[in-house]
Image 1 (spheres, one colour):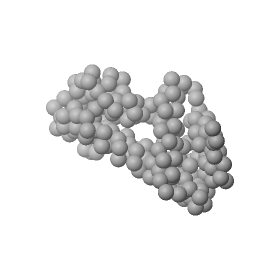
Image 2 (tube, rainbow, N blue to C red; image 1 turned 90 degrees about the vertical axis):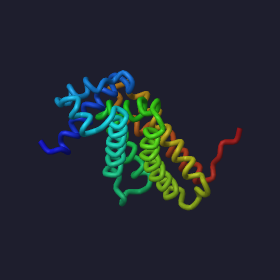
Image 3 (cartoon, rainbow, N blue to C red; image 1 turned 60 degrees about the horizontal axis):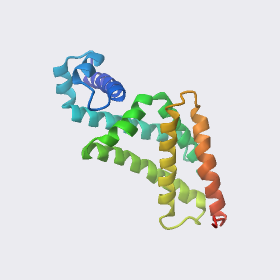
Image 4 (cartoon, rainbow, N blue to C red; image 1 turned 30 degrees about the vertical axis):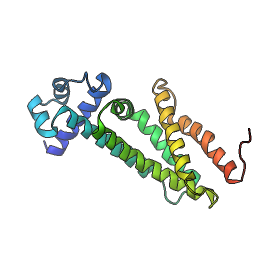
Amino acid sequence: MPRAVREQQMLDAAVAVFSRRGYHAAAMDEIAEQAGVSKPMLYFYLGSKEELFAACIRREADRLTEAIATAVSVESSADRQLWEGLRAFFVFVAEHRDSWVVLYQQARAQGESIAREVSRARRVIIDNVADLVRASGGGRVRGGEPEAVAHALVGAADALSEWALGYPDEPPERSARRVMDLMWVGLERRAQGERYEP
């Protein structure tokens, strides 16, 4: 079996075990057994438990950002691109629940090197969303506003995904529409000069 295929099997097993047990309770023995390899082989290919966890974070973050990038058509309007990206995000979470648990829940409790991996992936997504906000504003969204809105939008999607884990029957399209209704409709009104006045 090619090395790359074997590594993917080990990472699949590790993601499943980390998701189910959490980082601290996950045992390298269990990961090796689930992957169908020996524990020494697991160490040889992917290193220590911390290195293995970092490799899982890297792979799952890359898979998420790739899924979003692949789904978004550069020929679409800004609102359509955002819809396509949000839908891809929620589909990924629905289809890769273990990945999302590791990325969103487990990674938060780990050290600085893990936090850097998660921040890198999050930064790519936020930058892309900020570009869409700029494009949608027709020049009316200026300064640091696109980045602030992008942070809020990505945070809303993260939080809604966390909620959706408890509702497996929630269709990804409905979650994407909830965020679009909440954020995009508000952005269009802001672009027209409307503001909340307390």
